[in-house]
Image 1: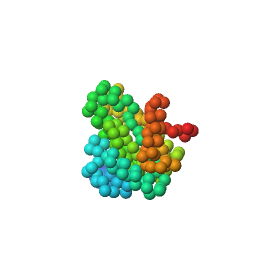
Image 2: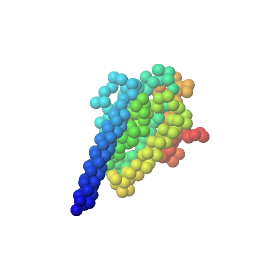
Image 3: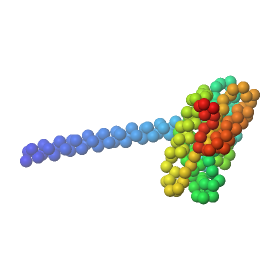
Image 4: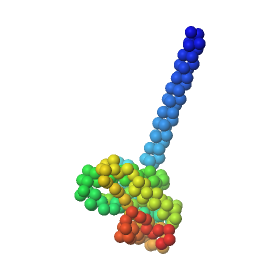
Length: 212
């Protein structure tokens, strides 16, 4: 009888320790989630003067006007940067087949994927219906290509079947650095041309490639 009592006491003590450990882990998880959300909500200094309340309501990304102002600022600063443009492949057909509500939800989730892919110093914007643009500060060439590819693969591998069993979503991207372009708009236009080439060459890819 005494042995059973000792065993019961030990079990109760172990249960209490496990419960304390569980509570500590839950608290740590909450702190991590809050930190990650804070990072996602951080805004680049290039967006100074534009409030989060002015962002695109569907995607949560800065508006076209805010993005274009940020691009002018980074160009005028003289710093190294890369502009990326991309859009969703066959988005009109997706809307026609799966409905506008599904299309809107796709755009909302694309906004989430973009925010997760970028650093706090970078800028993303929704510049058209299914058109997006990014400013990657301090990187060009292979590093910019790597960011584009990570985002492309993130979109490709996202579980879109949760919205519809037959739904597949891909993006085509183009990117360009400052190089010798005279204006920020020319840099953006060159990224657009590469994006169009990516789309016309088969979609679901980034141009220019590593060996372009």
